[in-house]
Length: 277
Image (cartoon, rainbow, N blue to C red; front, side):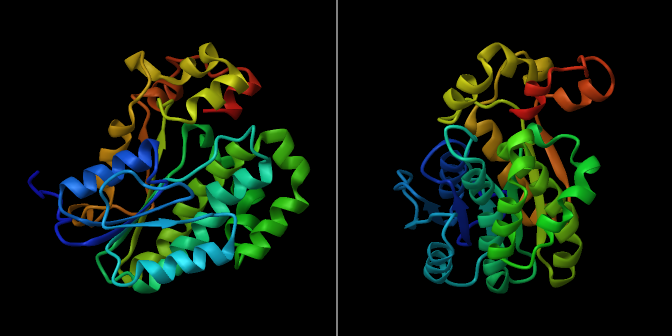
């Protein structure tokens, strides 16, 4: 495949590379000639340059992965995540936000000017702008331990809103907030907000909310996304050709957000709909 996006020979890191969007992203990057390092709690099946075990709930595991990745790192794709139940709200927050934030911050010193980070959030995080004051103490927490402590202290909030939803709101807020201070050193930070996507996590979402409810988020396309349809926007965002794009939340939801904002989709959805992807 022609490397029109500028990844040939560059070292890139993909979390969640064993399945779903992460696996698809790793596959695209291998095809365009990148040196792909896959990080996941399970083995990566894609023919990456290096496959490393990573548990985003464990600081020692994160530190070991960062050391094994080496330097320089041209791009980080933070894709790993949990769907919420059957996992606890705390584990969901750690894997979806607190751990990825530590991993990214630990890799930043190895990222030269012109590097980029793309994180996967979700349409479940829509409305994050109204939660900035509430979640900023978590978003700006100085380290993993204080982030975990915030989650434990605010367990009732997590239970009420859902760890999955809060983790995706926190990721959107962190991207908007941290991008401004990363950019002067030449590192761009962005995220995507996918709509419902057929991955290995979808059965868990359906068990929580039902397929009919989830399908209300598919947007005007009338169908769910595929993993590869979510992978390409991530690869695009981290390309050096997107050098003036930072602090952005790209809605990869087939027009759902636009239709919702313009009143073409019923905004008065049940609370449970707003809690899950």
